[in-house]
Length: 106
Image (tube, rainbow, N blue to C red; front, side, top):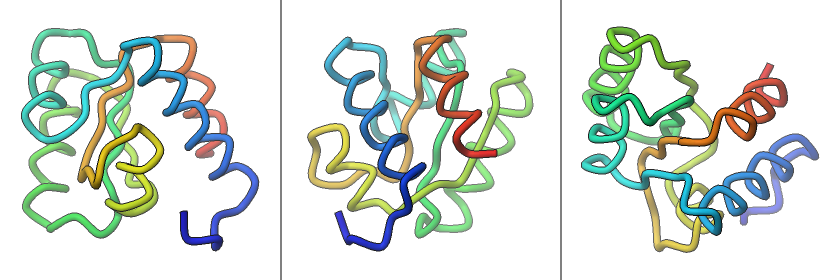
């Protein structure tokens, strides 16, 4: 990670890693969209450096399905936290971890 993250950001990235290890994450556009539409998603995170179209797509989808949506981090750090090269968006599919991440984002 780029070293510019604050303490809450580090905690969020760690929680995303825990989600990945527990199989409670949808990573990438296709999986994130699938998780939102199937009702598995409790939180959608989209990288701040994603395209405007990607942000709008997931903001609208999350609003329609009543899932909290946040823009957080960048594609490289988001992907690194969950063990991938880069990812524009992730879906957190665990209620407790999603609630904890939301509290850290506020």
